[in-house]
Image (tube, rainbow, N blue to C red):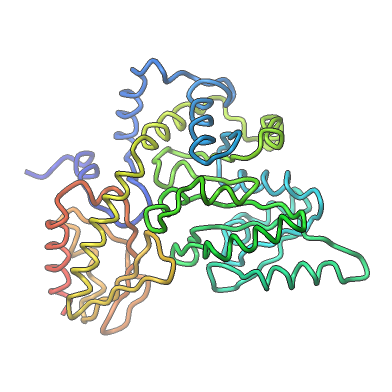
Length: 364
């Protein structure tokens, strides 16, 4: 019997996102379940209730004094840089970063900051590149000091690669000496820990502020957390409202994020282990090549040879496995991007491996 659409969606193993991609029906059922918990209470204009509980939990998990809920990562990054840029309006960023590529020049337009992009095509920049840019900014006829260094890690536009941690520490030490503030775009920081072995708080400790996404793998319908010193964030609620970021109620977002925050580390470690078994099996197939950059996290490129390679998504669909269409194709091959997430735990990994190998065999 063909499963109902909702049931099929909830049994799907999908490699298209960082999280579960909950359907509206699944999200509504979860909220109904969570609403029976007396600890889940409503907020008032994004203050108190489940929102405050989430802020406290996330501040502790990130090793920071305080945390503030914001409706989006774009706003979290923006307000962090706006707050930190007190000693200089220039902000060093990766050219491949979200704040530089995907935010519509919001910090330039709305806060008058100047983003200086470094390391084109790479996940991270070096201390030497930072020192060169800081020196260059101070050598002009008019001094234009660098006020903030912003680092994204992992970097989505670099196939999920992390910023080298040793280099990050060197840059942070230099910034402290020069009294340059530091911000971490750690949207995917918690999932990175399963690959790097570095706890989120250990990474965040090198930065004044850190942003974490609530929807990417904590499966909320939206939202972000910005954590940092209490004195820096104390009145951010007012600035959040000024930018239109105080939602009437955000508890449906906070409650779901709290739910998936519990036990996330152990669950995601299991998902990574299962995915590694799949990738090992595919790497052993004569028609496949598995590619992962240095510092890779949950993004893997699968190169499949064969004239029918581009049809791999269609071949996997009857097995309730979803992958995105090919990133690139030729007459004899196709390359796919696979994202590891918790949906791989919805069935024994041996079944997923068998379905992939059968689909790849057809590509030949």
